[in-house]
Image (cartoon, rainbow, N blue to C red; front, side, top):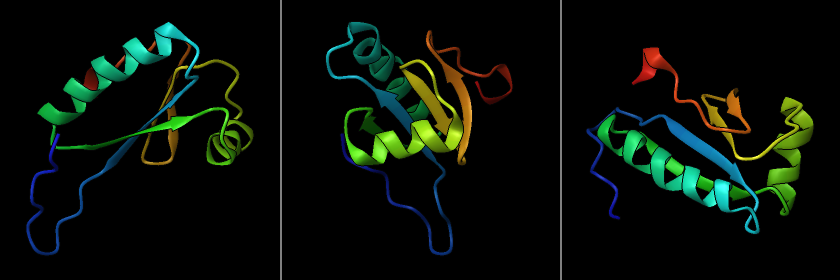
Amino acid sequence: MEEEAVGEGEEKEEVIVLVSPICEPSLEAVREVREWAWRRGLIIREVSALEPEGQGYILDLGISRVPALILGGRLISEGEIRLPDDLK
């Protein structure tokens, strides 16, 4: 999927989905979050919990279950992804 052009001086907020590549619910969550983020003009990035970047999020945010949804550097949801009502 191509990223939409951002107007000059505009920055899109990034949504990070922390996943385990061997966890089917994680992979399903990415599909759901990708559609949700696209409709809001957000950038989505999938990060593996097995990679150093993912492990950093786990330690920094105290994540105990994947998938996990991180928005604006804050942990929004973990385990079964629940998209925030105020962001829908």
